[in-house]
Length: 92
Length: 84
Length: 102
Image 1: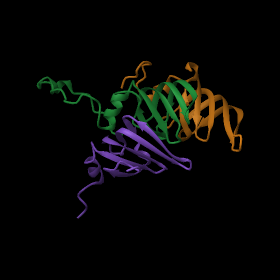
Image 2: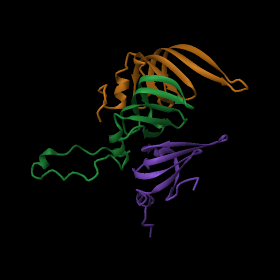
Image 3: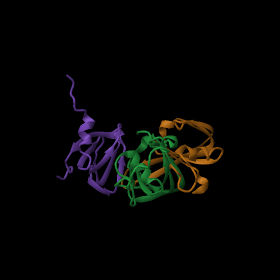
Image 4: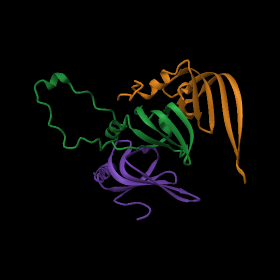
């Protein structure tokens, strides 16, 4: 399978090319975070550093509002089964 | 004597005809079956997706589609789905 | 998903003429054939959560892990994010649908 333009052969190449870069990660449970990618494996377990996590809290009601909570962590292990999407934000 | 017709042999006979796919969740698909594999991942053509919600059924038309077999519950050969 | 067929063995091919062209050259049929035909094309990837990702399919693997380019995230019909590249973990994928002729 030829990657159409960026020269990647398989999806994990995208992750490999993002090592040491700041990536955006979307997780189950409406969690999103960015951090520096240090390591990953075939389960998409991740090690991130300098992480900022964003948690969306939707308040149902007449006027639904979204509260955004942020928190920072120095070093983080993310279990792969919660991962929905990983994107290198430098190119967005 | 065990049954001689395997379930997937039956589905193989449906290639080229319309099929109704019911997912484990409140979601259904109809389409023309082009092929499938051992995981029952299915390639469909001229697809309609039905999402059943409390607000009603949302219909989406799709072209050639690879449907992940993971969440398929049942297959109804020859049927054109909930509207037929 | 099934494995992709091995590359043809050139050593065996020296004796035999090449096979006649297949009557159908379009990529239809098995999931593998569909995926071969759809790489490099615009696709809609729908997740089990109902979120859609629309982009150009770079590549995918046997787990249905997907790499997309020029990706738009759609939630209930609205664009909620754009990504230059996106890796989608295959267990979340409901379907991959061709958004242009293949």
